[in-house]
Length: 223
View 1 (cartoon, rainbow, N blue to C red):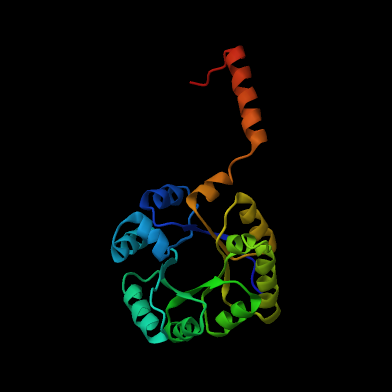
View 2: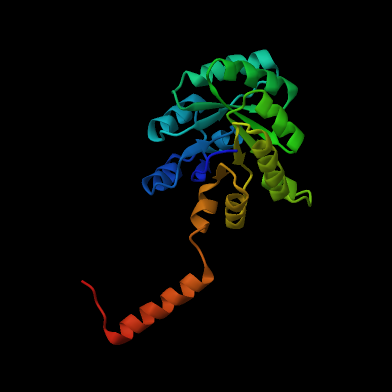
């Protein structure tokens, strides 16, 4: 069985300013990126990843773009040269699993992404993945409950003591975050807006509005 620990928050973005804001509050334990997020930044991938790694001490996932195992391995080694906290991100394909095994055997952190079934998660753990990234939101889009996948993987990994960390991904809502915490995900990666939305509640807003009105009526001032 896994040891009890705090759930880690990774932020899913390549926006340097957004990462910095969350990092200052202690809300970032790592960062996940992908080619789509890098494209939105409009910057060179190696430059962006280096800047993030300089800011964040935790794992920073940088994704390969090749499809063949030997090319993924070459790209993974190149990415790993950026910083010690780089996690090479590979897709959950047969070639991706081959790349995961080689890179993991070399002592590199590997995040196997685009996981949509428990069987895939088992294979990733067997290949030595540091993280497995099952996608919640994309299963929800198909009218399947993505949280069921998180729960299934958690049970399987606990059954056999797999050391691969369960990294819940494709998180769309603040509710996804709390549900993943209840299930026992080791990590949840979410866009900055979702993490910040966790602070919101309509009753908090309503209560604060009443406190402010009462303070104004009473002429209360602190400084």
